[in-house]
Image 1 (cartoon, rainbow, N blue to C red):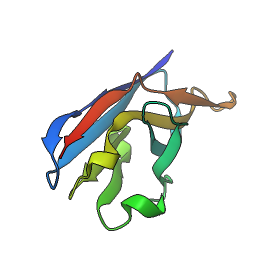
Image 2 (image 1 turned 45 degrees about the vertical axis):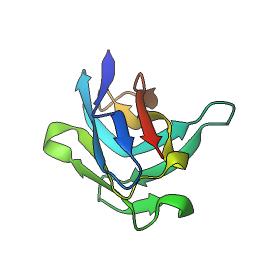
Image 3 (image 1 turned 60 degrees about the vertical axis):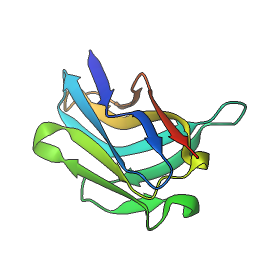
Length: 121
């Protein structure tokens, strides 16, 4: 079994910063691409940022220059540093990772439970 445990959400004023963390644990042979998604009330879940095992990154346009995704492969952990937060960043943020539990197993997509980020104006 594999789990993704997120932390770091909360309430912050516009212009503030937050850092999200997501650690994968359990039966892990390798962790491939990791990413952060978000879902605001009444909206579809959207990709915010992703990072490959080789640390190639991708961001949605609305967060470029404000959010930074990074990872620690030794700890199977991905981070999302968010600065200059805006009220429109308010959403539940979900961690996602592609993980193999053994050399013989397929790569499965795993999700965290979500962490609330609320930005007040």
